Structure formats: C-alpha cells, structure tokens
Image (cartoon, rainbow, N blue to C red; front, side):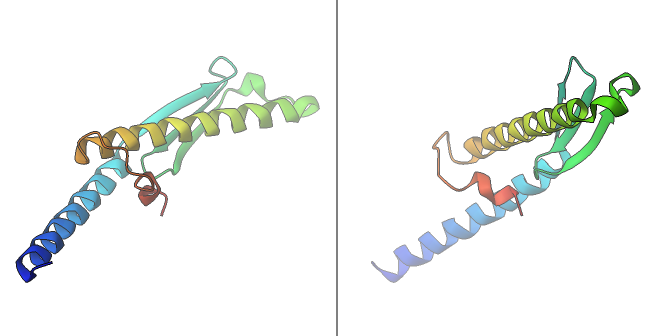
Amino acid sequence: MSKKMLEDLLGQAQKLQEEIGKIQEESRKKTVEASAGGGMVTVIANGAMEIVSIKIDPEVVNPQDIEMLQDLVVAAVNEALRRANQMVSQDMSKLTGGLRLPGLGGLFTQ
C-alpha cells in the first residue's frame, strides 16, 4: 500500500469518525415514546439509549398488585429502548449508505 493510499484511507476514517460523532450528538436530542397497558405506563428514551422520562397513570398504582405495575414499566422501557435502537440504526444507515455494519449501533450506548 502506497503512502498516498494510506493517507487517503486515514483521511476517510477520520471523516467517518467525525460523522459518527455528529450522529451521536443528534441522536441524544431525538426521542422515542413507548407505552404499555393501553397507555397506563409511558416511557420516553433518547438515541443514547437513556430513559428520559416515565409516566405512570395513577389508576394503575395498586399496592395489592405491584407486580402488574412492574411488568408494565419493564415492557414500556424495553419497547422504548427497542425503538431508540431502531431510530439510531436508521440514522447510521444514512451514513453508511444502507450498509449494515455490525457494531455501529453499539456506539450509542456509551
């Protein structure tokens, strides 16, 4: 590999790294929403896979059946994170031209 080719390759890698950084920053600002129990529990997550908020309808809070509330929270959180991951994957596919590169989605879980 010639020095020129290596320099070009390193330049492309640096540009890709900068673009990934931009997408990471943009993804932190984007949110997705998911709910469970017919909207009794609603969770909002961002593209950094962080839970931004959880809203629980007071009607679902029953001290005699706390397991149901726990199940609804888990279901809503899991769905919100799934949607956030899907959103990030779509954003990354724009950068990679639709190529599915394994591991790039994991860049957003830091």
